[in-house]
Image 1: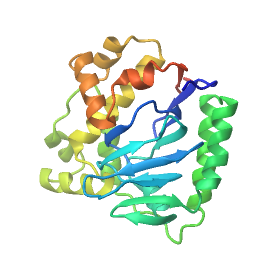
Image 2: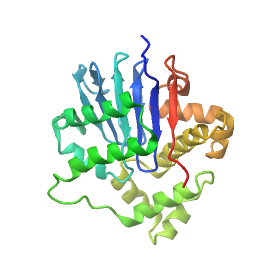
Image 3: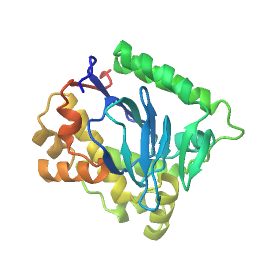
Image 4: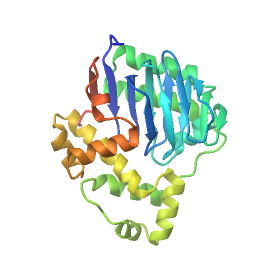
Length: 264
């Protein structure tokens, strides 16, 4: 099945958003918490310990979770949420059903469907799409009884990893920068983000590679600039985290537009 509108991949520092079909079932072990919304049709998911799959319209996954997803070629919105867990915490309270740590059929799914369909059908610019997504999330945050606690030390470590994405800054140096022992940093990082430091670093390199491609780099140049040893290293990491080859997203029959923030 082909779709009239090009797929859209929006890359922002805080979140990323893919809008379009996924042309094959995927096996995820992603490095970020994810909200997936069916804009047409439905989503079917199954974890290794589930006896049978479940169908839904909205699916909320914690970071680092193993799961199989089939969207049946329908148009979906797949949003990778903020690294420190505030988005996931707020959305998880809105899930009508849970299977372990997975939430599905959110009570705000229609709110997100309407807003995300606007982004897709209007083929919004990066700035307009970000404003729309922020508005959708603000509606969820406004209904929280208390704010989500963020450890500023972990936020600083995340910023250091982002600043030196092409350099393997040691865990020892990261721990020293925030006055923590290595074991304590490793523990707190996993508690805050849901993934180990190495896993987060790989995830951010995938993001940086996509940003570079949006700036006109070819795949090899983009992968090297993001700290991968070569394009094969990028492809293997992409497949291990997203359950598909980069070409599944980047070489779609209906084309894809990579949208990056304008440089001010």
